[in-house]
Image (cartoon, one colour):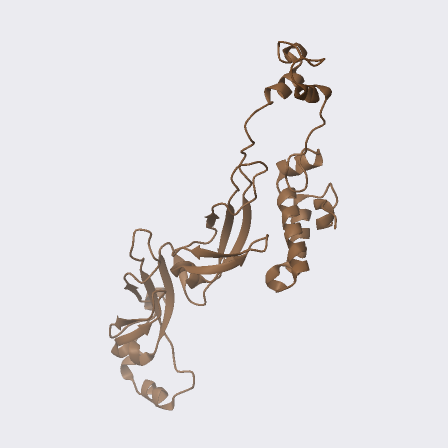
Length: 303
C-alpha cells in the first residue's frame, strides 16, 4: 500500500485543510479499531491514515514533506552529499586535506560553512509534535470525574482519568502520548478536548448546579421533606408550608467538586404541578373554596 499521505487519505496535493480533515474523518469512521474489533487489517489501515492526517494537518510538516525535506513518517530525508563529505573520511594526507581542516574550501562559501559547522554535532533532540483528540462526556461524568478507556491512533488502549469538575471545552494533556520525535528527542503530548453532553435536568452554573423540581399541591400547601436529586446523590430538602412556584431553595455542598476540596451548591427552583388525571374531589373543593375566589394573583400586572 502507498505510503504517500495524500494517496492514503485520497486527496489531491493541493487539498485544503478542510478537505483533508473531511477525508480523514470519513475513513476513521470506517476503520477505527473500536468499530472493527479483532480486524488487524482495519487496525493497520487506521494507523496509516492517522499518521497521514497528523502530517498533513500540520502546515509546517506538510510543507517540509512537499519540499522533500522529511518523509511520510516525519523523518529527516538525507540531503545529497558532495565529494567534500566523503573526503573527510580518508584521513590526513589524502588529496583534499589541508592543515586548515577544510577551512580553505568553506571560508568564502556560506553553504559549505553550514555543512562543516554541523560535522560532529550532537544528536537531533527536537520534541515530537502534539496530537489533538476529541472526547464526549456525560454531564455527571464530567462533574464527578471518571476513568475512560480510549483507543489511540496506534491501536493502543489508554485509560484516561477525567478529573472531577471538568468543564466544556477543557483540554486534558497526556504527557508523551503524541508524535514521536524526528530525532532522539522526547515524544509530544496528546491533547484531548472535552465536550459535555447536556443533562435532562441539571444545568451547570460555574461550580453550582441548577434544576427545576416539581412539587405536588399537597407538598406546596403543607410543606415537609422532599427527595431531591443532586450530582452528589439524592438529598432530603425541607419544604416550607405555603410554597409557591418559582421559589428557590439552596442545597449547600451538593454541586461541582472544587479543586481545593468541597463542592459548589445546588439551587432548586420549585414548580407546582397538578395531578395528571382530573380529580373530581379537588375540583369540588376548589369550586366551594370562597377564599380562592378573592385571590388576585395578577393584580400587580394591572389586570
